[in-house]
Structure formats: structure tokens, C-alpha cells
Length: 325
Image (tube, rainbow, N blue to C red; front, side):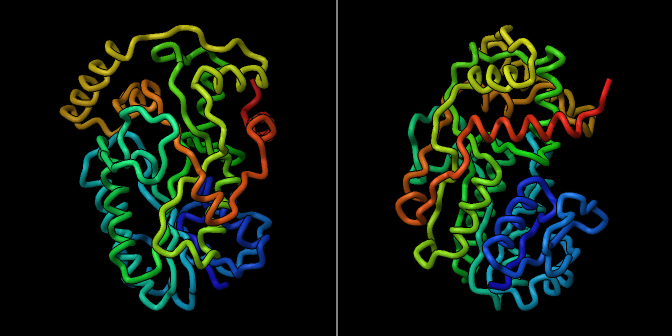
């Protein structure tokens, strides 16, 4: 197929490009103009198509001749004003769908945050959407946009903790903070969650784009094994060779503090996020484990890489790219 990946030079986008190319598809990479292309180095990319989700003309050009779109470009952060999220994740998605009106299918990368952090042990795609953050609400709006587009819409919600090589946004700073002893647990780190190793997730995305049965469906793509935050931190630290975090704070204390800090930062018009946010505390305080049984049964998705091997590969990448003392 002729496929377009938006956000192609990002962490997960680059893995999706790599997987699609390995499966024989002709991959076109849509990138934010002016952003680095290092993550795509060495991949058989058919074309690089710079385009901004706020520019309809550029999107028309990027979508030319494309059969299936994999839409990953988004504003992904845990802090910021509602308008900033809406402009990219909702309006940008609607603009992309309009530009892709001659295409057949769009596979939309959403988030489990559309469900809200209310505690999930073995939930699935049928759980009600109940987003409580601006990011989660905007991604729910993006889901609605692709479903109303007239294209074959497939929604993918990754496990709560995506990780893997090239992850400079999440895993790299987490590993550095663990090595520096700057990580604390919330409520003992006992909350369950689902992980998503990037190459596993990329395979799930590819299957969602290829399978005729996927049209109109929503899938959770995760690694399949429930883990607690404490277990994840312990295993990362074991591979890094540093002591695991043992300090813990009650969420009943930290959540109001995060709310107060966000209010103060917004009032002072501070652009960077505060040191703790309600989104981060929400991730850490309650169970958030979702099953991927539908993807297994309908797409034949089985994660090819287990968690331990995935973590080994990711830590090896981190050791290669981290600055030396």
C-alpha cells in the first residue's frame, strides 16, 4: 500500500515507519517543517512530506496518492491550555481527514487517557470514555473526528506506558531521574498499568491498517502483562545498576499540591510545566490496566517482544546515547 505516517520522525512514528516498510509498504513520512529527521535515518522512506496540521494546503499535498494514513502527529504533553490541545489534536485531525478524502482508511493513534484515571483492572475498549484532562479530552475529540470523516476509521489506544529506543521524551528523562535518585512513588507504587513497547505497538498499528476487519473498530495495543509502577521502576533500576526508589507520598496529599501548582503556573503565564501535574499523579495513583484481547482475536496481534527483552533493548539504547559524566 501507499501509506502516510504523520509524526513520522517522532519516537513512535519512526517505529511505525520502520515496521510498515519491513512489511512491504511504500512509506511516506509527514513531518513538522523544520524538525530533525534523525530517527528516520537508514529507513527506506519513499518521500518526506513536510506539513503542519494547521495548514490545509500542505496537508492536501502530503496526502496525495495515499491509500492509508497512520495519524500519530499530536500535541502530547500533560500540561497546557485547552485551546492549544484543541487546535492540534481536534481541529488538526479534522483538517487532515478533509485533506485525505480520496484515501481509504485512517488509523488514529489515541490514548487510554480518554477513559479517565478512575481505576481499571482488566478493562477493554468498551469502557466508557471519561477524560478528565485537556489532553485526554482533545484526543477523544480526535477520535470523534476520524469516525465522522467518511474514511474507514480505526482507533488505536496504546498501553499507558509506551517505551523503547529513541524515546527521548519519556524513558530517557525517567532513566536519568532514577539514576539520580530523583523519583518517588505515589501510594507505594502499587497501581497496575499496561505497557507498550514501541516495536510491538508499531506491529499492532500496521495490522490495524492492513486488516479488512479493523474498519470502524477501536483497539487497545499493549504488551499483555500487568505490572505495578514499583515493579517497572525496580526492573529499570536493576538494569541500570542503581538503587530503586523507595520514598513514597500519599496521593491525597500530592494531588491538591499539583492542582495548586498548575493554577499558580497558569496565573503567572509560565510556559513550562510545573514539577508535578494532576495528569502525572493520575497516572501513578490508580490502577490503569487494559487488556488487548480484541486486537489478538480480530487482528492476530501477539506482542513479539516480551517485557524483559524490551526493557533490555531500551536500556542498551539509553546507555549508548546518554551523556557521559
